[in-house]
Image (cartoon, rainbow, N blue to C red):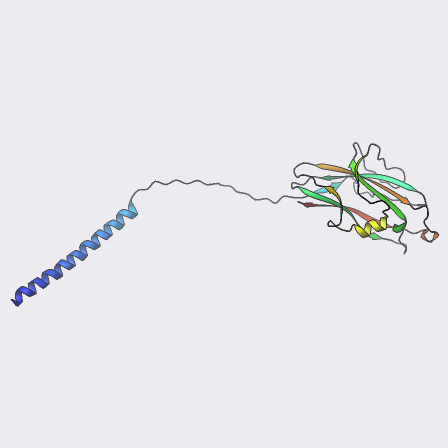
Length: 213
């Protein structure tokens, strides 16, 4: 009786071991089948991506010369000169006009006695020259807007419009093609300029700045 029970125990143990082995074989076979079976695949790719920054570019046609170089300015004198400014950057931009570096070499600034009018518009066939007397030719200029307010002096202009944020003009050129504006400057020494301003001077830079929009 005891021997029979022992034989049955051995049989059950052997059966369990066999079951475990069979399960292991089945799991291994399933793993092999799932990892080695053939599959369909497809891909798409967008290759050769390149990134280049755009630019803003602005220039004028003064060829390195000054717009005004007036000597012996006397009360009542008035002069006009024109300059062309071109934007040819790749980005859409806003352009503003302002003054910088107002200075004097003689101790008293003549700027409060100089009336200034600046107009923006178009002019064809203009050639830049060294200006200062009556050499500046604005013949054919057509104004689209007057940038300076009535009664503006060189001094008030330089005080009010000092950088891009405070600058004048609503010019918004598009990128990718050259866009040109002509600016006519009219300057005059006040007829009422006091004697104390004799021999005095004023110097200023006129600046056009472009920032991409």
